[in-house]
Structures are given as C-alpha cells and as structure tokens.
Image 1: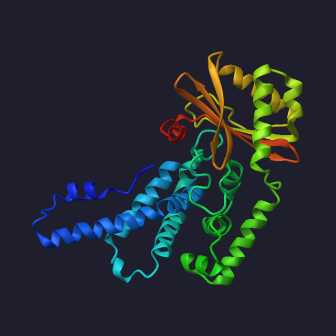
Image 2: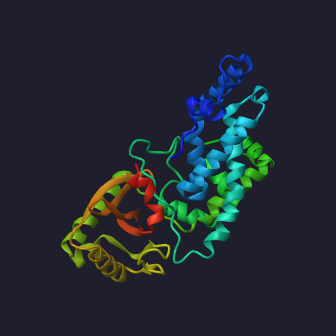
Image 3: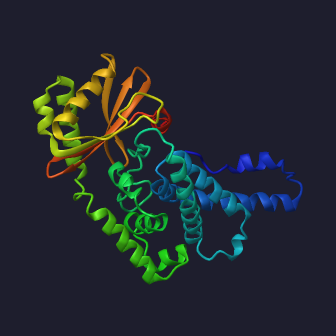
Length: 315
C-alpha cells in the first residue's frame, strides 16, 4: 500500500533552501498536512477499496485525494475527516463507472482482490461489513451512489445527514439509496456467518481436499453451492461459475490436483476473515475464501489472476 510522502521526501523533491524562512514555513505546512492525512489514510483506503474492489484502484484514489489535500487551502477546512472522506467517496463514485467499463472486456468472472487483514481486521472501519469477498461481489450490482451510501452507512456507520452532504443530496434521498441497496442485496445473501464458523468450515474443507475424500467434501457444501474462479485470462480458470454440490466438489478436487504435489496450503486472514493460500515454493498460486449459511459452505471464491495476488505476496 502506498504511503503519503514523508517530510524528507517532500523536502528532497522541492530542494528546499532552509535559510529561506518562507520555504521553511512551506515545509512545516506540508509536514502538518502529511501528518493529518496519514492519520486518516487507513479509513480513506478502506472506503476506496470497498467501492472499487482492488488495491491498485484504491491506492490511486487515496493518492489523488492526497494531491488535492496538498493543493487545498487547509485553513478554511473545519472538519478534516469529513473533507477527506467526501473527496475519496466522490472520486470513488466516478472511478466505479470507468472500472465497470473496463470489466466488460474482462475474461471470465471478475472477483475482488483479497487484502491481508491480520494486523488490521477491518481496514480502519468500526465494522467489517462490506469487506467479505461475497459481499463485495454482490455489491457490484449496485449503482455507484447506492454502493457509496451502503459503504459509508454499513461499514463506517456514518449518519445519513453526513452521507447526504458527501453525495450532495437530501437526507431523505440518502436513506432511500440505502434502502434500495439493502433490498438489492437482501434477496441474494444469507445471514453472514461468524468468523469462527468460516474458519471451522475452511479447516474442514482443506482436510477433505487434502485427503481427496469426495463424500466428506460434499457434506460441507450446500446443495446450491456456487464456485467462482477468477483467472483474468492470465492462468487456467473456469470461465463460468460452477454450481451444485456434486459438480463443485469434483471441480474443486480437480482444481487442487492441478496445483501439483509440491503445492502447500495455509490458512491466513484476508478481508476480515479466514482464507486459504495456495503456494508453490515462494510463489502464491491462488487465494480462496468461502461464504457460509446454515452451517455449510454456500459460496467458494477462487482468485488465481496473478495481478490480484501481489498485495499478499508483498505483505
């Protein structure tokens, strides 16, 4: 994840003459601006990531917000967090539209990029809502404004009055957008499972997959389970979702065999929950996470596109 430039880098880039009081003042102001921005950066990244689903796009938004913060007359900003959250949200709404145009030519299903959250379980949010791969995938169906309201309300618990100000709309319309977003999502998801339940199911899934026990694996899967693979045209992956307990179980066993006998499997933390890392030596081949309902796995999300594995490899 990119950091806001340090004071030293700012000074170096501007080749400041410290004998000049005016330039010393400029450096001091930039230093204060960087410190304030840095204190909000995790939250800003959390908003942008939930809106866009990839680390690179979220980092671009945060960097753009930093440049705008630098150029702003900060003396007239009464609430720094509100200003920065508004900036990042509006930039993200614009970016969602262009990202969707790019994804129209994406090869196979598109899945969000997983990000490690072992040290920061909620990416700076009070809640982990709208962080799971299953939810981020469903949120792709929302309009940019609906998605923004849902993220700000459900993930960060902002009041509708403030959300309305961010979106430059009325509080009543902000509530209506939130209601539409919840209605869109309600019919397509079960109640989210607890972190411990996901961990238990993923452990059992890994045990069954390692043993190649088809019956044991099927018992862990819902009748209508769906497996989605994202290879992005870069590596071999299913171009369509695989559905149904028997088909998914056989597909998964076959996919795991393709990784080879030297592949290793490790449970880690990503997107606020447990995920499976599949590695060959030092190379990360894939990441998998699951969603659960009524004690069984109802969704499996396999990310194989190498472009979406870098944030974990570099962490």
